[in-house]
Image (cartoon, rainbow, N blue to C red):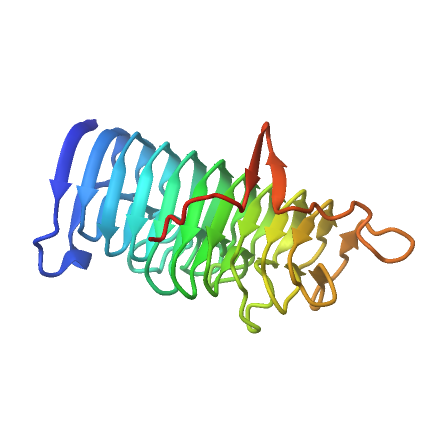
Length: 306
């Protein structure tokens, strides 16, 4: 089933949160290409679908999410899209609408998307369970996305529930507000495990004391390597508070209090430090870090939240 080359305008609907522009349930082999959604709850709402792909599409002014997947959807792709949302960008959820199914959303690729969140406490990309214990997401790659957090309480990328086998690679998350770049934490579905966070950039987000750090990592068996945090204040750059975690070659540039890492709550944590207790790999300066073959910098980048 293919939906392509159309614009769906829901801006005149009085209760936009209850209206989804494109919805499929328990369907298979769906392709969304060159679609524009204006307003409404979700642009695409996929429930229990298998083998779906969204590409070259745009969603603006969503009340809930641009690209929503739940009820154990599997084998999904969202690639090269643009999302301007009031709450969520991409959702990949294990449980069902009633939140009484311990389901797992399996197999996702979310790459080269531009995600902008304008509302309070929303997340640009959230892999989650939200149902009974055991619900979550698995076998997911999140790579090369450009994320803007525009309002207090926003999170760039969040992993929660019994989510596992997750790779978060080469993403740029920026903002000028109280928020967090990457969060790995529990929800009703359980505790994440086997997650890698590699070569991500968090630029300009200020963590509140309750949030501790711009990158906050709970869960089990998590690797945090080669990430870069710029411009936070009063806090460490990274909070590691899970079990069997490893951190190496992470860097920061800015005012971060005493330490690059806060490790309260951590068990069996390995951080590569030199004999003086400093990070063995020196911080990167001048607000710049290499991501793959391209250099990204905080200087001269347009403010997407305007």
